[in-house]
Image 1: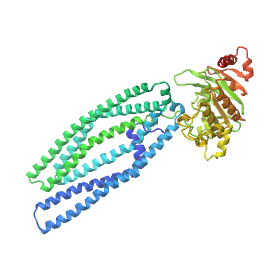
Image 2 (image 1 turned 180 degrees about the vertical axis):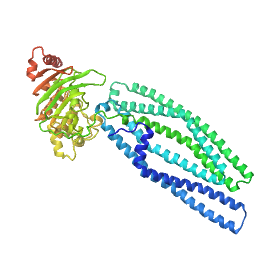
Image 3 (image 1 turned 90 degrees about the horizontal axis):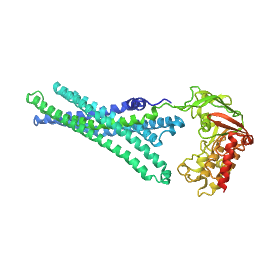
Image 4 (image 1 turned 90 degrees about the vertical axis):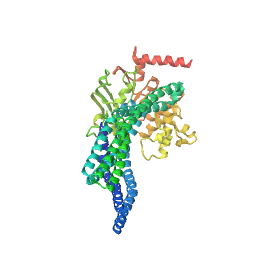
Length: 589
């Protein structure tokens, strides 16, 4: 999926106008018709005054009635057309555009790698998504204000030129000068608008971050700290907003004064033309109505131009995550991963995080089909990175990662992830029912299968004790459940997925002894004939593994069965095992 254009104006054109060009054109034609009717109404009123001025006669009465009929017809259109314009642009343009932008932005965010998302503030991403979806405000200014402004000025100019060419040219000159004054007067306001949107986005991101971690905030008694931190940012945002408002008000006042000078100039010149008998009274009335109406549009243009700047600056600020290319993408001709045996091989793999030294250099590891391999080692030596590379959370710089001889770089990410079930250290649950969490990723799953999966994961008993059983809501991130209960739900989800490859990423390291025992039993039920990679901090959980690999600085320094490594003289695994045994004895006492 291609990123959105980097320029806000180009984004509005390519994503909002171009795909809906016929609806956009329809709006423009309706507004043109509306402007024409409104201006011709003023012209008819001027003609009526000119006819009445000539005195009472049957001919004058007949002409007056015809003009009144035309005015009545225009009035009907004036009532009907604006409502049609509003309804048409909402239904055919604004709503479809908003749906398109929200859909595309959502899809694009999901296309980013896990690494990209976790390095961004969730609140900031949501705020930016909302910012770029607010295109109806920009479209409204473009269509309802700028285009209507052009239509009004064009029709008024044409009618004034028809009355007197110099009067029409003076009007054109006033319009151009007002537009230039408006543009340059808003330069400072535009810069401040961008600062205002940036400050608003940062504040929203920090606020969501604090609220989403409210339990931690309360536990560490940091509510006052967070409030002060947010208050500082809020105060800065309000100051920028106030400066922006003052700059706009100053420019608005200046433009207003200039517009009044232009208006008086037009009326003075019209009276001069009347005094030299080059226009009549009806023409002066039309000029009066035109000048008042036309220059009112110019006054409003200052307001709407400010609104346009603010919304465009908001879109520009919101485009950031939608301009960044996806870090991990399927190859153009990526194929579906076909699992027959679930054999895994890391072949001469080289990988380094950005701006850091190589973690893996020509790394090799082969895991046979159905083999259970434990990965151990001290923190920071590549255990979790290894399984992240297998899931293609990052792309390696050199070498290959093969599953049944298929390079994972050339298969679709969807088929790759479908082949694996992952039980992380911290089970991730949605704020939904237990039933939905267990069946997540599958469609149309029977209750019988969900219950069977829960039994395999040793979760059925505690679920049935809940007031609403399987329909119980788990709360935000599963906060209504204990750590062990969350892990068992994650195991039940892995049972439902029934993938040929199982990844256990320290699935019991954060649990107490009793919960660890229950979860370990659930994991044993899950293992079956799958190919298993288990990362573990507690070495005792790896007794069922066929082979254990000890990683240090991205290299395999020891390899063997649990018993072999435990008994190895001066071995790193044996040393770590002894330390954990001593810790366990101390905890007992």
